[in-house]
Length: 322
Image 1 (cartoon, rainbow, N blue to C red):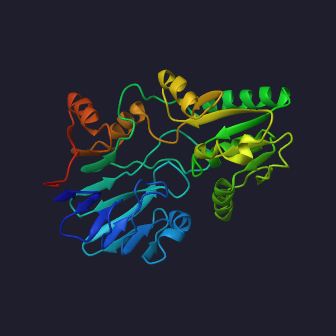
Image 2: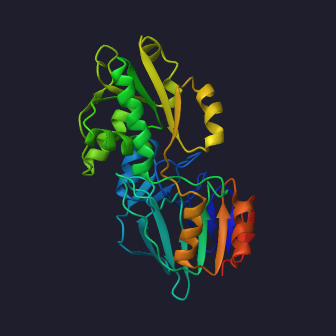
Image 3: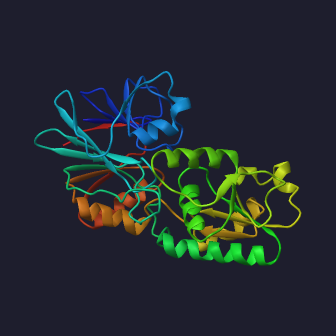
Protein backbone atom coordinates (compact mmCIF):
# COMPACT_ATOMS: atom_id res chain seq x y z
CA UNK A 1 0.00 0.00 0.00
CA UNK A 2 0.99 3.61 -0.40
CA UNK A 3 0.19 6.41 1.99
CA UNK A 4 -0.18 9.97 0.71
CA UNK A 5 0.26 12.58 3.40
CA UNK A 6 2.72 15.43 2.80
CA UNK A 7 4.70 13.03 0.65
CA UNK A 8 4.38 9.46 -0.60
CA UNK A 9 5.07 6.59 1.81
CA UNK A 10 5.64 3.04 0.64
CA UNK A 11 3.86 1.19 3.45
CA UNK A 12 5.61 -1.82 4.94
CA UNK A 13 8.90 0.03 4.52
CA UNK A 14 10.45 3.14 6.01
CA UNK A 15 10.73 4.76 2.59
CA UNK A 16 9.10 8.09 1.73
CA UNK A 17 9.35 10.06 -1.50
CA UNK A 18 9.88 13.85 -1.23
CA UNK A 19 8.40 13.95 2.25
CA UNK A 20 7.37 17.45 3.32
CA UNK A 21 7.48 16.45 6.97
CA UNK A 22 10.25 14.83 8.98
CA UNK A 23 10.36 11.13 8.18
CA UNK A 24 12.67 8.30 9.08
CA UNK A 25 13.90 7.91 5.50
CA UNK A 26 13.04 10.03 2.47
CA UNK A 27 14.16 10.06 -1.14
CA UNK A 28 14.72 13.65 -2.31
CA UNK A 29 14.20 13.97 -6.05
CA UNK A 30 15.83 17.38 -6.57
CA UNK A 31 17.12 20.45 -4.78
CA UNK A 32 14.11 22.60 -5.75
CA UNK A 33 11.33 20.65 -4.03
CA UNK A 34 8.68 22.71 -2.24
CA UNK A 35 8.33 22.97 1.54
CA UNK A 36 11.45 20.93 2.21
CA UNK A 37 11.82 19.42 5.69
CA UNK A 38 14.95 17.33 6.30
CA UNK A 39 14.30 13.74 7.36
CA UNK A 40 16.44 11.63 9.68
CA UNK A 41 17.93 9.80 6.68
CA UNK A 42 18.00 11.02 3.08
CA UNK A 43 18.60 9.30 -0.24
CA UNK A 44 19.56 11.58 -3.14
CA UNK A 45 22.15 12.09 -5.83
CA UNK A 46 25.50 13.63 -4.82
CA UNK A 47 24.54 16.81 -6.69
CA UNK A 48 21.24 17.22 -4.84
CA UNK A 49 22.95 16.58 -1.51
CA UNK A 50 25.54 19.26 -2.29
CA UNK A 51 22.85 21.84 -3.11
CA UNK A 52 20.98 21.03 0.12
CA UNK A 53 24.11 20.82 2.27
CA UNK A 54 23.22 23.65 4.66
CA UNK A 55 19.70 22.27 5.20
CA UNK A 56 20.57 18.63 5.89
CA UNK A 57 23.52 18.88 8.27
CA UNK A 58 21.63 16.89 10.92
CA UNK A 59 20.50 14.16 8.50
CA UNK A 60 22.27 10.93 7.64
CA UNK A 61 22.71 11.07 3.86
CA UNK A 62 23.11 8.31 1.30
CA UNK A 63 24.60 9.80 -1.85
CA UNK A 64 23.55 7.59 -4.73
CA UNK A 65 24.79 8.26 -8.29
CA UNK A 66 22.59 7.52 -11.29
CA UNK A 67 22.18 3.90 -12.42
CA UNK A 68 23.79 2.35 -9.34
CA UNK A 69 21.22 -0.05 -7.89
CA UNK A 70 21.21 -0.84 -4.17
CA UNK A 71 19.10 -2.87 -1.75
CA UNK A 72 16.71 -1.66 0.94
CA UNK A 73 15.36 -4.75 2.68
CA UNK A 74 13.71 -6.82 -0.05
CA UNK A 75 13.58 -3.85 -2.43
CA UNK A 76 16.02 -2.95 -5.19
CA UNK A 77 16.29 0.81 -5.64
CA UNK A 78 17.87 2.83 -8.43
CA UNK A 79 18.08 6.56 -9.13
CA UNK A 80 17.83 7.66 -12.77
CA UNK A 81 17.81 11.11 -14.42
CA UNK A 82 14.57 13.09 -14.52
CA UNK A 83 15.74 15.75 -17.01
CA UNK A 84 14.77 18.63 -14.71
CA UNK A 85 18.08 20.05 -13.41
CA UNK A 86 21.56 18.97 -12.35
CA UNK A 87 21.21 15.95 -10.03
CA UNK A 88 17.42 15.65 -10.33
CA UNK A 89 16.28 12.05 -10.27
CA UNK A 90 13.48 9.54 -10.36
CA UNK A 91 13.50 6.47 -8.16
CA UNK A 92 12.84 2.97 -9.53
CA UNK A 93 11.62 0.53 -6.88
CA UNK A 94 11.86 -3.12 -7.89
CA UNK A 95 9.88 -5.51 -5.69
CA UNK A 96 10.87 -8.56 -7.70
CA UNK A 97 7.57 -9.21 -9.46
CA UNK A 98 6.48 -5.56 -9.67
CA UNK A 99 8.17 -2.25 -10.42
CA UNK A 100 7.24 1.24 -9.19
CA UNK A 101 8.63 4.55 -10.45
CA UNK A 102 8.37 7.81 -8.54
CA UNK A 103 9.14 10.71 -10.88
CA UNK A 104 9.48 13.89 -8.86
CA UNK A 105 9.86 16.81 -11.29
CA UNK A 106 10.47 15.56 -14.82
CA UNK A 107 11.28 17.24 -18.11
CA UNK A 108 11.48 15.70 -21.58
CA UNK A 109 12.97 18.74 -23.29
CA UNK A 110 16.74 18.91 -23.78
CA UNK A 111 18.27 21.55 -21.49
CA UNK A 112 21.95 22.56 -21.23
CA UNK A 113 22.77 21.42 -17.68
CA UNK A 114 20.68 18.28 -17.00
CA UNK A 115 21.01 14.71 -18.20
CA UNK A 116 18.12 13.57 -20.43
CA UNK A 117 15.13 11.95 -18.73
CA UNK A 118 15.34 8.17 -18.36
CA UNK A 119 12.29 6.05 -19.14
CA UNK A 120 11.50 2.44 -18.33
CA UNK A 121 8.33 0.34 -18.28
CA UNK A 122 6.79 0.02 -14.82
CA UNK A 123 3.71 -1.47 -13.20
CA UNK A 124 2.96 1.52 -10.98
CA UNK A 125 3.81 5.14 -11.74
CA UNK A 126 3.65 7.83 -9.05
CA UNK A 127 3.89 11.01 -11.05
CA UNK A 128 4.15 14.72 -10.30
CA UNK A 129 2.08 16.66 -12.85
CA UNK A 130 2.75 20.31 -12.04
CA UNK A 131 1.61 21.47 -15.48
CA UNK A 132 -1.09 18.91 -16.18
CA UNK A 133 -3.43 21.29 -17.99
CA UNK A 134 -3.62 21.47 -21.78
CA UNK A 135 -2.78 25.20 -21.80
CA UNK A 136 0.72 24.43 -20.51
CA UNK A 137 2.76 23.36 -23.53
CA UNK A 138 6.29 24.70 -23.47
CA UNK A 139 8.64 25.19 -26.45
CA UNK A 140 12.08 23.53 -26.68
CA UNK A 141 14.93 25.27 -24.89
CA UNK A 142 16.65 26.51 -28.07
CA UNK A 143 13.41 28.12 -29.19
CA UNK A 144 12.80 29.65 -25.75
CA UNK A 145 16.23 31.25 -25.44
CA UNK A 146 16.04 33.08 -28.80
CA UNK A 147 13.70 35.93 -27.69
CA UNK A 148 15.75 36.35 -24.50
CA UNK A 149 18.91 36.83 -26.55
CA UNK A 150 17.10 39.30 -28.81
CA UNK A 151 15.91 41.27 -25.75
CA UNK A 152 19.46 41.39 -24.38
CA UNK A 153 20.95 42.58 -27.66
CA UNK A 154 18.33 45.29 -28.09
CA UNK A 155 18.80 46.46 -24.49
CA UNK A 156 22.60 46.61 -24.77
CA UNK A 157 22.28 48.45 -28.10
CA UNK A 158 20.22 51.14 -26.36
CA UNK A 159 22.99 51.67 -23.76
CA UNK A 160 20.84 50.09 -21.06
CA UNK A 161 21.52 47.20 -18.69
CA UNK A 162 19.50 44.03 -19.30
CA UNK A 163 18.13 42.41 -16.15
CA UNK A 164 17.08 38.77 -16.32
CA UNK A 165 14.82 37.71 -13.46
CA UNK A 166 14.87 33.94 -12.93
CA UNK A 167 14.80 31.43 -10.08
CA UNK A 168 18.34 30.90 -8.73
CA UNK A 169 18.65 27.14 -9.19
CA UNK A 170 18.09 25.19 -12.40
CA UNK A 171 16.67 27.55 -14.99
CA UNK A 172 19.26 30.20 -14.10
CA UNK A 173 22.17 27.90 -14.90
CA UNK A 174 20.60 26.76 -18.18
CA UNK A 175 20.30 30.41 -19.20
CA UNK A 176 23.80 31.29 -17.96
CA UNK A 177 25.34 28.48 -20.00
CA UNK A 178 23.43 29.46 -23.14
CA UNK A 179 24.24 33.17 -22.80
CA UNK A 180 27.89 32.37 -22.13
CA UNK A 181 28.04 30.36 -25.34
CA UNK A 182 26.71 33.41 -27.17
CA UNK A 183 29.53 35.54 -25.79
CA UNK A 184 27.66 37.67 -23.25
CA UNK A 185 29.38 38.89 -20.09
CA UNK A 186 27.26 38.08 -17.05
CA UNK A 187 26.87 39.55 -13.58
CA UNK A 188 25.18 37.17 -11.14
CA UNK A 189 23.35 37.79 -7.88
CA UNK A 190 25.15 36.01 -5.03
CA UNK A 191 22.55 33.23 -4.70
CA UNK A 192 22.81 32.44 -8.42
CA UNK A 193 26.60 32.81 -8.35
CA UNK A 194 26.90 30.33 -5.47
CA UNK A 195 24.68 27.75 -7.19
CA UNK A 196 26.61 28.15 -10.45
CA UNK A 197 29.88 27.43 -8.65
CA UNK A 198 28.41 24.13 -7.44
CA UNK A 199 27.49 23.26 -11.01
CA UNK A 200 31.13 23.82 -11.95
CA UNK A 201 32.22 21.40 -9.22
CA UNK A 202 30.30 18.71 -11.11
CA UNK A 203 31.92 19.47 -14.45
CA UNK A 204 29.45 21.93 -16.01
CA UNK A 205 31.36 24.66 -17.85
CA UNK A 206 30.13 28.23 -18.21
CA UNK A 207 31.33 31.34 -20.01
CA UNK A 208 32.31 34.79 -18.71
CA UNK A 209 30.53 35.56 -15.43
CA UNK A 210 31.25 37.27 -12.14
CA UNK A 211 29.60 38.13 -8.85
CA UNK A 212 27.24 41.11 -9.16
CA UNK A 213 28.81 44.43 -8.22
CA UNK A 214 26.67 47.55 -8.80
CA UNK A 215 29.69 49.49 -10.06
CA UNK A 216 30.80 46.80 -12.57
CA UNK A 217 27.82 46.15 -14.82
CA UNK A 218 28.70 48.07 -17.98
CA UNK A 219 27.94 45.94 -21.05
CA UNK A 220 26.97 43.03 -18.80
CA UNK A 221 23.77 41.04 -18.39
CA UNK A 222 22.61 41.11 -14.75
CA UNK A 223 20.87 37.93 -13.59
CA UNK A 224 18.90 38.09 -10.34
CA UNK A 225 16.09 36.23 -8.53
CA UNK A 226 12.66 37.79 -9.19
CA UNK A 227 12.24 38.92 -5.58
CA UNK A 228 15.36 41.12 -5.81
CA UNK A 229 13.97 43.48 -8.46
CA UNK A 230 13.08 46.05 -5.79
CA UNK A 231 16.41 45.99 -3.96
CA UNK A 232 18.38 49.23 -3.69
CA UNK A 233 21.28 47.97 -5.80
CA UNK A 234 18.91 47.18 -8.67
CA UNK A 235 16.73 50.26 -8.24
CA UNK A 236 19.84 52.45 -8.46
CA UNK A 237 20.76 51.20 -11.94
CA UNK A 238 19.84 54.27 -13.99
CA UNK A 239 19.20 52.77 -17.42
CA UNK A 240 17.82 49.26 -17.37
CA UNK A 241 15.23 46.94 -18.87
CA UNK A 242 13.98 43.88 -17.01
CA UNK A 243 12.68 40.56 -18.31
CA UNK A 244 11.25 37.82 -16.13
CA UNK A 245 11.72 34.22 -17.23
CA UNK A 246 9.34 31.54 -15.99
CA UNK A 247 6.74 28.97 -17.01
CA UNK A 248 3.62 30.77 -18.12
CA UNK A 249 1.07 31.01 -20.90
CA UNK A 250 0.77 33.95 -23.28
CA UNK A 251 -2.40 35.05 -21.46
CA UNK A 252 -0.56 35.23 -18.13
CA UNK A 253 2.34 37.39 -19.30
CA UNK A 254 0.72 40.81 -18.87
CA UNK A 255 -0.17 40.21 -15.22
CA UNK A 256 3.26 38.73 -14.52
CA UNK A 257 5.07 41.71 -16.03
CA UNK A 258 3.00 44.04 -13.88
CA UNK A 259 3.58 42.02 -10.71
CA UNK A 260 7.36 42.04 -11.14
CA UNK A 261 7.71 45.51 -12.69
CA UNK A 262 9.25 43.87 -15.76
CA UNK A 263 9.37 45.16 -19.32
CA UNK A 264 9.08 41.67 -20.79
CA UNK A 265 8.09 38.16 -19.75
CA UNK A 266 9.49 35.08 -21.46
CA UNK A 267 8.51 31.43 -21.20
CA UNK A 268 11.30 28.94 -20.57
CA UNK A 269 10.66 25.64 -18.86
CA UNK A 270 12.64 22.83 -17.27
CA UNK A 271 9.43 21.02 -16.28
CA UNK A 272 7.31 18.71 -18.38
CA UNK A 273 4.38 20.45 -19.99
CA UNK A 274 1.04 18.79 -20.62
CA UNK A 275 2.17 17.12 -23.85
CA UNK A 276 5.37 15.82 -22.26
CA UNK A 277 3.49 14.33 -19.32
CA UNK A 278 1.31 12.41 -21.76
CA UNK A 279 4.36 11.30 -23.71
CA UNK A 280 6.11 10.11 -20.55
CA UNK A 281 3.13 7.99 -19.47
CA UNK A 282 3.00 6.44 -22.93
CA UNK A 283 6.72 5.64 -22.78
CA UNK A 284 6.61 3.89 -19.38
CA UNK A 285 3.20 2.26 -20.05
CA UNK A 286 2.15 1.66 -16.43
CA UNK A 287 -0.76 -0.45 -15.22
CA UNK A 288 -1.66 2.14 -12.59
CA UNK A 289 -0.87 5.84 -12.31
CA UNK A 290 -1.05 7.87 -9.11
CA UNK A 291 -0.86 11.63 -9.64
CA UNK A 292 0.18 14.42 -7.32
CA UNK A 293 0.33 18.23 -7.48
CA UNK A 294 -2.05 21.02 -8.45
CA UNK A 295 -3.68 19.57 -11.57
CA UNK A 296 -3.71 15.92 -10.50
CA UNK A 297 -7.51 15.55 -10.74
CA UNK A 298 -7.73 17.06 -14.22
CA UNK A 299 -4.79 15.09 -15.55
CA UNK A 300 -6.21 11.87 -14.08
CA UNK A 301 -9.37 12.38 -16.15
CA UNK A 302 -7.21 12.95 -19.25
CA UNK A 303 -5.40 9.66 -18.67
CA UNK A 304 -8.62 7.79 -17.87
CA UNK A 305 -10.04 8.85 -21.24
CA UNK A 306 -6.95 7.33 -22.82
CA UNK A 307 -7.51 4.02 -21.08
CA UNK A 308 -5.18 4.31 -18.10
CA UNK A 309 -6.12 3.45 -14.53
CA UNK A 310 -5.25 6.86 -13.08
CA UNK A 311 -5.94 8.17 -9.58
CA UNK A 312 -5.39 11.71 -8.27
CA UNK A 313 -3.92 11.94 -4.78
CA UNK A 314 -5.38 15.19 -3.50
CA UNK A 315 -5.72 14.58 0.23
CA UNK A 316 -4.18 12.25 2.82
CA UNK A 317 -5.14 8.71 1.86
CA UNK A 318 -4.04 5.09 1.73
CA UNK A 319 -4.33 2.94 -1.37
CA UNK A 320 -3.56 -0.57 -2.53
CA UNK A 321 -0.29 -0.32 -4.39
CA UNK A 322 -0.54 -3.19 -6.86
